[in-house]
Image 1: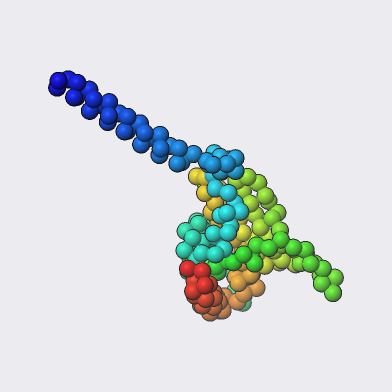
Image 2: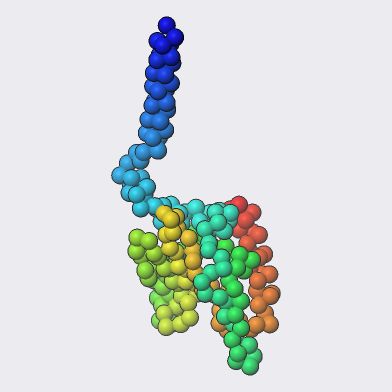
Length: 185
């Protein structure tokens, strides 16, 4: 009798464990082809960008600080001074910053905003006037299946920003970020 009870207990436990594992596995399976592809290669860029531009916390979590390229400014005597591009200096970006457009203005000047590299695991977005300095350049890379910003150039810290105005500019960026955080925590 003890043997039967032990065998039944074991069988019940094995059946319960099997159903639990099967249910868990089924819940983790993709429900459509797009999800299957995303699970096999990683996070979808469009979904990532939607979260990135609407949540300050998510945005900060997906930037590899300090960025690859430091902020470079020129002093009055022509020397270059560099500052690491850190979280405190990052201007939060919204969806408008990543619009794709080509606008010809009255003067014939052309403003473009587009992805100059649009690969499966690497994207680079640039915006600015043609034949002029960029306003924005953001490099995205998929690392471990998730998208991250690894480098950026932003007009807030343009090459012609005087070194003496750097601290004030960082303060302005932080003020703008406070507004973004209130709207998109």
